Amino acid sequence: MKKLIIPFFCVLLFSTSVEAQQTAAKATKTEATQSKLTPKEVIDNYLKALGGKEKLEAVKTTITDNTLSVQGMEFTMSTKKMGNKFKSEQKVMGQTMTQLFDGEKGYFDQMGQKNMIPADKVADLKKGKPIEALGYDASNFQTVTVEKVDGKDYNVLSSDKGQYYFDTTTGLLYKSSSKEGNAVIKSYMTVDGIKFPEEIEAEGNGQKITIKTTKVVINSGVSDQDFKG
Image 1 (tube, rainbow, N blue to C red):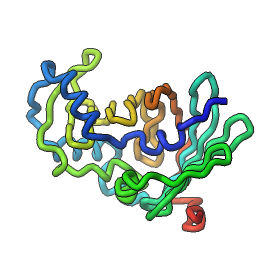
Image 2 (tube, one colour; image 1 turned 90 degrees about the horizontal axis):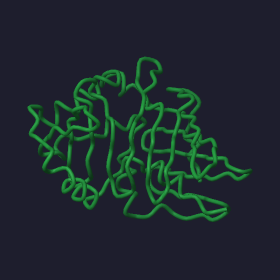
Image 3 (cartoon, rainbow, N blue to C red; image 1 turned 180 degrees about the vertical axis):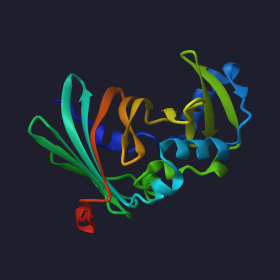
């Protein structure tokens, strides 16, 4: 069976790069217009649409169960988060693949092959939060443009980390573009008053993936012991 890179790709789904941002900018430059909103207003609207900043900050741990479809196969994934720590386990064809980050370092283990997370990714992972949306920093974005995708307008934040498309009507994140790949959030689900992506269509490293969230547990069932390597 072809070696899968899904665990690492999924965890870094919304991480971005200068190269991706520059490539995307060239493709859409002629279609973009200046937005009336500031980067801070776009981010504030996003947090409000998800449930409100105060409610999001009250989330200390999460457990997320997903099903993933890729290369004609379907398998399950469960991810635990606490602060910037996470542990993700995927089960496919009788095999278990694990990725773990303890807040300082981590690894991904696939088919018995254990590899450390690259040093250039660790700095970004250290900034992780149970609710990743809280990691957006308006100072990283200088301008906001408005671009039309499939007939709808989106506020687009661009930086040296990539591009993020926010629905001008709902305020929710719709798409991200990065060197690792592109991800489109097709729908959201609500758990305890907070919105989480329910279905994501992603593409990266030559693979197309559909990720469906089946369950989210907030502030329960996670301890420091879960992140011991």
